[in-house]
Image (tube, rainbow, N blue to C red):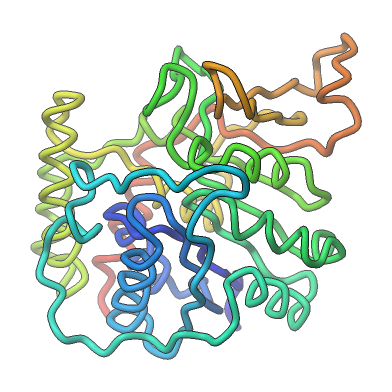
Length: 321
């Protein structure tokens, strides 16, 4: 019996695709569905990519189309210079059968699936958090039925790590800051895997080549899909490799001991020049802070065992069947 029942809320996206392969191949994960959201590309593109990825790597897992825009803002422009014009590094997708598209919108798929498996479902969210906020608005009582919510997003200033799309904000949270503030304040367990740890975790070119050479079809796909993405990292950050964003959130689900966390309520700024900034009041901080006090504590990742995380991904992709 699988250890982790997951709904993967995603905006594929190169790193989303790499994280999907990780989940599909790990024996302790049971994927219950993918829910698409705008973000790295338009909702049409992210839904198409989610169906392609599920069809190729997780046959039989349904996809539900999610939000096309944030709760209260216009949809952001697609990030073609990072993820390619097709969202998947401009690779040729081929004719793999697409996963079935569920008739329900993503937020209803989340509600119904959580209610069908009370206390068992982890929501793994690696794009803007609009679908999760819509699920809460439609059925607030699902929050205590969710096992946990693991979010790739945010940045909390550890070792000076701040935003990656503005000086204050990380891309997924900035994609819908209103939704993020709602999700971080809901009555479900939340763990946030942000830039503080994902930018410390780097897959080098040699590491990716090793996975290509030993990981069969999945390893070749990870190499192919990451070529455009690696070129972006080389140009923008002078990296000979890539930051490991979304797959770090998968690693947290599987091996939380690889991460050091700090507890305390989290707020997201929803206006001003620092819109999208994530701010935690640590539980050890005694002074009153009315905007934080009374909200549930979230776990924020502030440290990571980088070799352990990279070994987990490598072993999963290169394991002998």
